[in-house]
Picture 1 (cartoon, each protein chain N blue to C red):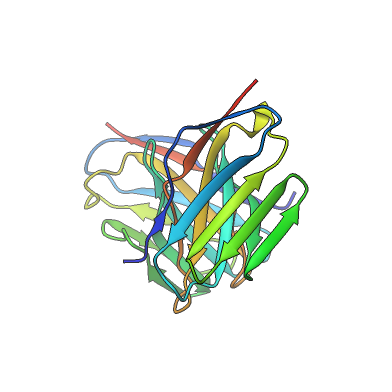
Picture 2: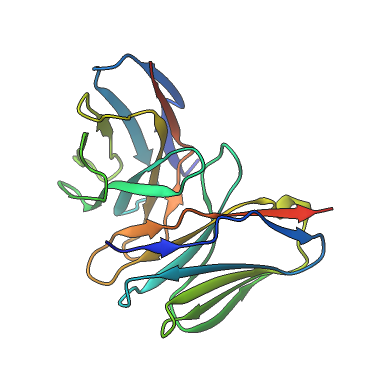
Length: 111
Length: 111
C-alpha cells in the first residue's frame, strides 16, 4: 500500500513569516508530486506541481523535491491570513496512474 | 464556462438506497477520478479512468461502481453495499500523467 505522510498540525506561523510544510512518500518510483490547498468545506485547489529534483518557485510558493530522501516540501513566503487552510500533498506512482493524497496539514497564519 | 461540474451538491438518502453522483467536464481531459473525504481526513481514491470504456479500482472501491461511456462524464454510484456512505465526494479530471483539477464536490448524507 503506497503511503503519503504529512504532519496533521495545526502549524501556527506569524503573518509575514515563512511557512514550511513537509510530506514523505513510500513509493520510491513515484514520478509526480502535487500540493493542493483546501479551505474548510471547499474542494482542493492546485497550488504547485513538481516532477524533477530541486526547487520550483511560483510567486510566494516554492516546492522542493528530494527523490533520494522521498521527501517533498512546500514553502510559503510572506504568509498571509488568507493562507490559513489545509494543505494536501499528493503523489502519482510510477506503475499506475493512481494519485494518492496525504491527510493534510492544517496551517494557521497568526495576524 | 469551462470546468468540472458535480451534481447534486447536497444529497440525502435513506439506508439501503443506491445513489448516483454526476461528474461532467468540458475541459477535454482524458483522466477522471473519484475521491471520498471524511471529516478531518485526506482524500481516498475510489475509482479512476484514463480512457473511455475503461476504469480502474482505487483503494476503497468496495460498495461503489462507475462507468465511462463518454469522455466528458464519469458518474459514481454509491450502492447499498457501501457500509458508511456519508461523506464528501470529490470528482477530479486532468490531462493524462498531469495534475488534477477538482469539482466543487457532492455531500452525501445517509439517514
